[in-house]
Length: 159
Image (cartoon, rainbow, N blue to C red):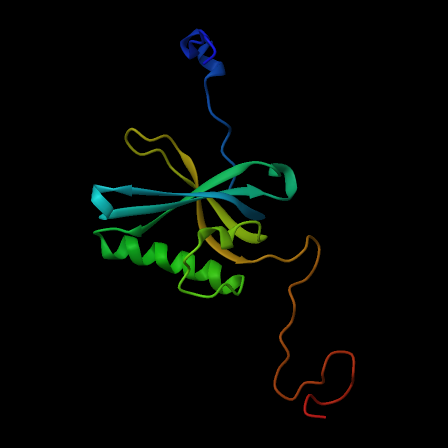
């Protein structure tokens, strides 16, 4: 062990602040790590995903998403499980999800929103949804309608 003597209280008050909040936006990011925490003997289990933004002015910034995958409150648990299912569906990951590392390094469009300060908690960024990522500047792929010509062929799909 190295002997050190660091006292964060020595910093001036204006140097102690956290990062500025990311303004509400939709950006492409990917999960770079995750952690599962267990409280109350398994009555509360939380999957915390660490997302790294891949594009734009906030590239390389990180946002954490805490999903209460086991919780006494049924609504809280259902919201978290729907979020995990959404990620699995976006990336064609088979369910049930048994290995959270399958979520890592898959570009995903995330909705970052600001949660206002509440009591002892300061304002923070939260993730409010996920969707498939498309490369910057690329249009989302268009789904073919029934009877539409196959792309680039001029033929009907059944030909």
